[in-house]
Image (cartoon, rainbow, N blue to C red; front, side, top):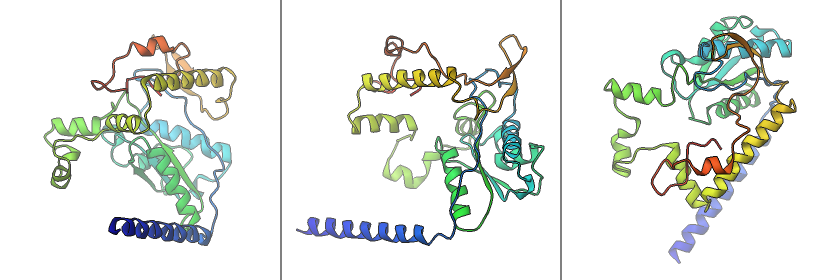
Length: 274
């Protein structure tokens, strides 16, 4: 009876909070619109973009965005940049560094960086829209940048650990709750796969379909408008135009993916991109 009453009370509280949120949304004075979007073509580690610095990649897209919209770069109120590994050339506020590296945005425009791991770029969009909807800003650029050739995945944690600066999960409060546990998105993916009863075969089929869709969209030109072509280098070091995603693998098959080892014993997650 007590448990049932608690559950009912909790459910009522959730409904009340959701009602308040809905009313809050209706009271928002402004509507946010995405007026333009562009990106570089994705690159592989040590691929065509290997000689580019992170801030220069961000600046190239910022300049292209100003060109496409025709706005005055100085009219931008804020640049919000998502970035996971904020260390080395991606440290020191990569959003601000991208503004300083841009040719068509004055240095008077502020920039900031946000880290929500692989959701960092999406979070930048959320923060940008919230700023507009609340009336704090009129024009905000949401972006994301990462160059894993120069700043490998996990560098912000690994480099600091090697320098003796500890690990993120060693906080006393965390270790009291989950002693010895090291958090990672790979572990999270395993937990989600088990929770939703996904099989290794389903995951591999999804990965194959993803690459097939990417290859089809590329060959039929669906990505052409959104991509900002950049000067890159091929394997021989010769200058080329980089305007196609390097991560799409049209030859990906169930047979090839089935040969990959899982990251954990008795797990389902492999190195195959999904």
